[in-house]
Length: 323
Ligand code: DGY
Image (cartoon, rainbow, N blue to C red):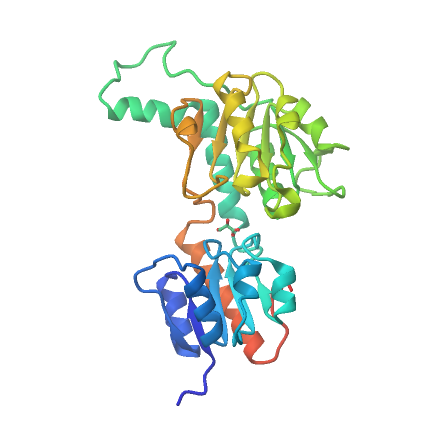
């Protein structure tokens, strides 16, 4: 019988990560990459010493306090966000949780920048036109977008990813940067970034607002209808954080009547459902939650999750423990 810790992995991982898991643990991989339902998650928690999970696993109170002895003592979450956990229930069940901060900063900021350019320049729409065979050739007034140069970017949440987005837009696009963060942040790489006292100030002043706050109950609909209505006419919204930090229905209303000029969204309130009303709009660029999806980043995220499992089972401090 193997003495290695038993680890169940709830989704497919990049190849190098699965190879390392197999070398270290008595591991059960998810070869067909199906999404675990509550019953399968509970079964995994009852039969393994640890799980390598991700954002598609709802570790709710129902799952973590399901009754019956849970064998698992650790869940390493393949994500920086951990809004898929009821942390109090995890603590009560004596299960350690880790996440993957740091390694996905640049990839996620790249995605926010891509959305900003997509939506301001309308690139995705013009590419679709070309692919449909509708392009009539160059014209001085065709395919016109809006330039980011000299415009103001408002960052809500100036953590690692918010700062990486600010650097890109300040140095690469010549944008002015304002931000809202719970505490002021001095980033020498964006020396002229100005802290605002409230989110409303950012919403009212920015030409483009980019959201970088965590998900979870505390921030659900934090970007409320009232805040969205404070945005300047002609302003744009970018979201690579979590879908439910915005009141999505309010956003759609304001996009439909062009009160907000456009939005670039990588995340949605009820993934993978994307509201038909959003799909029907031509002033939005929509991506399938791919913020961190480069092979390099996804491999680094998996390796950090494995580092956490390994440290936990060796009785050492975990590199990125949440609770
Ligand atoms: C995260 O890490 O929280 C992302 O949303 C998944 O890459």
